[in-house]
Length: 397
Ligand SMILES: [Zn+2]
Image (tube, rainbow, N blue to C red; front, side, top):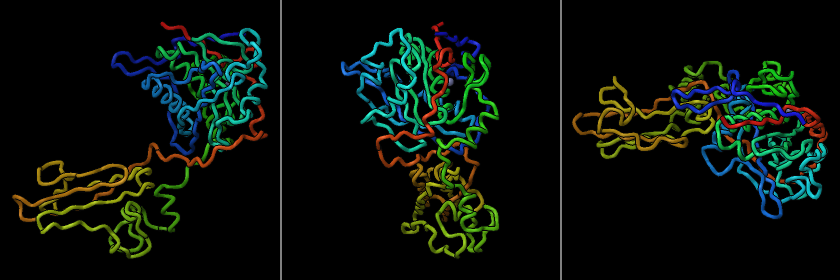
């Protein structure tokens, strides 16, 4: 068995401003696809557990965030389900056979994912990731090593997280890089050349993906779900609008973006459906708006603004004590203005939109079913054979 050593040159360290180290990647792409990683922690019948994220939430968040960052190069958003335990001596280390020094057969990956009663999802965009002690195609690795085996393409991974690697940043980066490497295999990407600066390079460094690799993921993978069309452009096409966001196809005085933000019909004069402020005895005006989920995801920003002269329109509560923004979250925004010193007051909703950088909706998961052998996932990465670069041994500095 050959080990490849991740050198410190692979790690971008920014110690001066105390920013955590990060795996070097190329620029993120707009998010167009999503996968959900289903982490399955294998547990022996004696209670011994495989290592997953450890118990430190900051470490867990860091590793997940690095994996998400690495795959963001390909426009794929990675989300993580909560860890599920699965008791199986066989899945954990190949028991009853001892693979302390002998190599565990590669076919054990297929056997693991097809075990009865495993908590896997059959949805293609869900990657079932088994955290094990001994990965098929390998013998037992030390606790400062991480290695894995994956279908190419497919939605199954067996991976070993050496628990010592959770303890230091370069170790966490090694874990993130290995998991991202295996996920990329599931998305259909094979190995690149040895020892180059590429995520898929055996013995290589960095988390970078090339444009051809990115194109292969975007064009070929059946294992990342294209995001539903919930954007302004999709909505505009739905209604066959001819004017832009600032236009008003139905000439009802509400421009198209405002109709989108309020869930109105941009082809009907439906201003009577628009939310109205509540007038409290001519002493206060309260305006409450239900946000449209798709609009929020698409980068639409809602702001309640107030004025006493119809010229200046600050956000409610921004400047004076006569108004306030009562609530502003992903579901609603509400503001109030009152009359004290001035003789009149006005309130309105302002809607703006910035191009979406991230989309936060989660693909629905409907059921947990027994997996069936899927021809698409029957091909196993050659990684485990002989001298694959999956194994990263990282020494603490
Ligand atoms: Zn590999």
